[in-house]
Image (cartoon, rainbow, N blue to C red):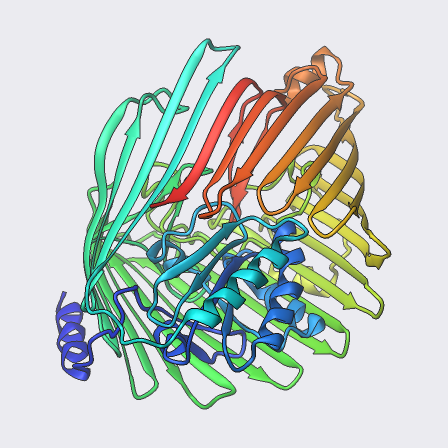
Length: 632
């Protein structure tokens, strides 16, 4: 607690500047560590902000158009693309950007999700907002369809013709967003309704926020109406202070990663106080708080210092009950290369026979011309911190080194990360050639320790480690974006996961009929081989996923989906699935103010929803679902 009070005193006297705009301020680093301030960008005129991720197919289609817009309006508009990949994928962002050459816009990373929560970004990506020079929203859009860039260009032209850089209003700004999910299950004869209403009010550097959560009932059958995540925050030029509910991340989550993901029902929020400051190149954060599902107080501090543009060093510490954990990290950037290294240790001072926990993560990126290379390694042992902090997940979640895929079947049988016993490596090579050609190759391997060390895996990455092998996969695709009106991608995926060998072939074709209308055809075939032993041999089976979608920019998308399998009775019981076919239809509509409404009806197989190496099983479903996200 003394550390918290000392830091609060330091940051409160470090700056007296008050935020100029009623819209919330944020600052994020790019892949080279250079900070970008939202309010500073507004000082130069209108700003276009888009939120995207590597696992988001529509995001990858939108980025080149944003780069072209940034080039066209260089002196009149600032374009900022905020990457939202978690610690699971953020290491791959730098080589991706290096090969693509998106140099006209500013691209920053929101790995902890702080800005997404502050700006109330909905779950669907990409999400785009255009601000005038006073910080007012004048246009927003959810998703990307071929032709959306035309509408965006018209909105920018209209704004630049009318924006006169008038004096910024001192009045406050109210943000309200609404996320709802309604569903009816034919199997369970059950109706579920969930509503999340996020609201915040910002004025003179202060922000008040709260979440109203209504479950009548939830998909888990819970009935509840409650006011959650209430907080008061003050932001100035060099520091911020927050009391109430808060999230956060130190480094890449090795020690501390509190976050919310409504899709997989994770919410590891803390209640207490958190403060951060930035003075003379030293960034410091301190907090004290309690997780929602544990009667435990935890304190944390994090320091990060820029040792010169190529190198940044950081130190983190957590303490709770009689336990503590510490970590140190280095992050460096030099021409054609960047690297990140972090090592942590965990101890319990009250137990003589307690096995110390350790965690190590390292990654290196190389890029040259049209080629980018990402290599990562991890070694986690007895390093889970405050398990089930929210009733489900721990309070830390380091990089998982498993890929988030663009397609459905490669995500069917993922690995749930275990911070107590995993070591692994991952390598990804990207190439972006001329005339629309590009390719990607990714391979990863995750093992439990046994008698192994990370050095064993690095010295023999293709070796047979028998029962220690938990998960391995290989993924590759080749893509052509400029074959007349067509854009196609072909992919291959192999994985071994918990008694299953998986082999998938994937094809995707996009036909751009004209500037605003397009068709997407997608087919996935996966052969699943159930590993046999002396007690059982369940053989193999096939799965298929097919999609046909019509897009009318900027509003409509209409899809037909069909899933198939040929499992017999014993296999269905083993993988906990149902016999197909599984037909479904989906209609999505994006309104002029960016609200997204999706109506889905039909059947689907059981499967996983994953984020950052944490997965939630979704049972087979037959019925109707309505989801919507919008801001007032």
